[in-house]
Image (cartoon, rainbow, N blue to C red; front, side, top):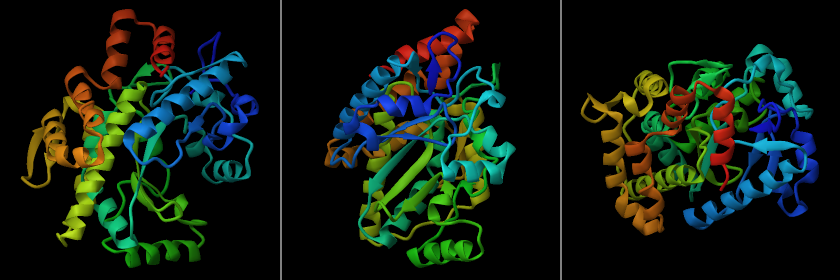
Length: 351
């Protein structure tokens, strides 16, 4: 979030910031649909630790650049009190066209997420990995929940970002594709029909990204603490590693009903890790923290193989000490001050 240092409201300032970002980082600091939204992106990394080092450096670079413009940088799933009516669309052709097409839906998209890309060799393997991650999306959301406030109000949700983005087309829980041929044929059908220009207009919570050779997980609320971002990244890459091993062993992939996965996602958005989720294998309702702990244990050997065990263990902090949403709510309950909460988010966002 780009934030005005005086009012602590969102600042319509992406172009000003881009002008002062050091040239060496220009390709890693980008605009998004709305002017207060700043995207930073690491380069491809061999390890989670390397990605974490890059992310910390990038955060510091944009914080320092913002300071020269009277701006602050904060990381969370939503700004606690900013009003959607006050925000401006970024003056780039793709964003202007999108705003014209979606109107009110686009105007409300003042939300902030984290995307994790994992390089996967082979198109059918990538589809298998994306299909496999699909069932875990609600749990990943619950762990990342960090947006309990919207336009100055407590929403009663741990992730109010979810219902905002839910209004977009081609978002949310993706279909189970099964094979690359099915995926590519369905994308080509939408392109021929004029529904989308290319597959990047499919904003699923997990999707193959053939231009980059990755599977991209897009379910996460933005994390205030870098350590939490890296814990979630290690969870994704370890899960992808396990799924690749299952693919190589020719384990069949079970297709779980979209309506059941989506029902879990709503539970996760409302209750976060305080709630229960349906465990697809047993068909039972299980507390989200238990499911998360079991997944961390299951992925331990894969994290070891990838050298990210320390980062993966950071998931336990989210389980035991609470997610970003818990920390926001606890502070607001103590102070009743949303401006103070924004100041705390800004401070805690520093690497």
